[in-house]
Amino acid sequence: MERQMLRATLEAFRKRGDLKVCQTEVDPIFELGAVLKYYRNEVPILFERIKGYQMPVAGAIFGERSAYYDLMGMTPENRLFKMMASVANPQPTRLLPNGPVKENIVTSRIDLQRMFPIPKFHEDDSSTYLTSGIVVLKDPETGQTHISVRRLQINGGNEVSVLVASPLAQRQYAQMEAQNRPLEIAIVLGYDHTLLLASQISSEVYGVDKYQVDSAMRGEPLELVKCHSVDLEVPAYAEIVLEGIMPPHKRKPEGPFGELMGYYGGVGPHPVAEIKTVMHRNQAIFLTAFPCREEHLSNGLIREMELYNAVKLMADVADVNVTVSGGCRFHAVVAIRNARPGQAKSAILAALGSNKDLKHVVIVDDDVNIYSHDDVEAAIATRFQASRDLVVIPDAIGSGLDPSNSLRGVTDKMGLDATRPTDENGQRFHRAVIPGYEKIDISRYFPGEN
Image (cartoon, rainbow, N blue to C red):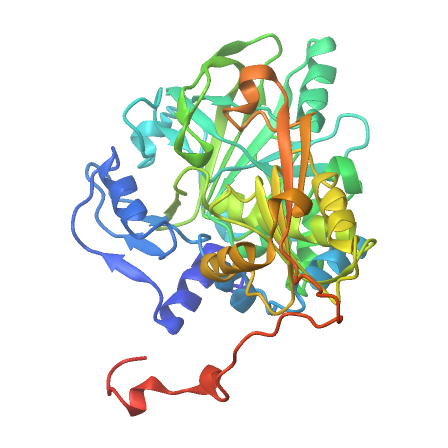
């Protein structure tokens, strides 16, 4: 069923005319990342010639919001409700006896950097990194499978350092370490938008199997196969799967690494994974992601679902946008309908309380395009007065990914009420409109332009 995972996605991009194919040889050290960044990590690119390797590389596959809508059968209007329904009503997966990812199974002489064109993106990165690896773990207590994107530093040979950031994964590893037992791990490379989006849901918060959420989102069972050497299941149509163990009591320095908002993340001791088996498809395609763009966009889409649920208790929410410019976590814009006095401030409090990472939120009316920086800035310029419309919460819990938060361990949070003021006669601001402007076909006047 090639409609699942990366190859189906690349074919969909080809049909849409959105896939760039680079036939010039590209160095995976710095040069590949530079090309991706030139296109703002929004244009999907297949690099067919990688210096020193026979394997092609796909990048920027998940960097553009509309691709999620088109490839997952969602619309901007129904996306929040489709995601909520999938979390609330997970569906069964389908276990296959075999699958394309098992076409090649390597169990000896594993040298990850020799086998795969793993890029290095920034000059001070500690090593090359797997930036698109979905880590698969099984809860030692419940047996439930958990998946999440983790950054993975290449240490040499068959070893990678694993940034175990989530409390759930930390607890899973700690439980096995307390028993002096290794934790089994699989790393999936080469997947699609649905699996990535499902991986961003919090298992700890929602208590769901993300594979089953994936099945609900894609509208058909996610097809899985058993790993070769560990007791885990992985997508049957993935390009590459790395299998191994995280030994107890073994840590190595990890970082620095060019992280969120373009700053380097710190250095710290983290667990390692020893890769015992590599499974891959024939003519495998290596998937990479420019650091902290593609994964964070998918994470931001899930945060929008959570933000909507928090604010709708206080106001009639038209739409929400957790912005890319704010790292898909620090900044949000919320549009509400028919705001009554005080309602925007209540929406601010609900928004800032919905997630510790959210730092600044702007509340606007539903006549504002919340995906347009110009429109949001215009609303702030004309509808906001700092003396009465500004809400500041000092010294709140913040995100460790915010460099200014790490200075003191707390974050000041801010909300701006940029909804329309009401004058003494009850008349609200009305925006000037040109009838028919939204439907104008400029190519009628200037052929070739669109």
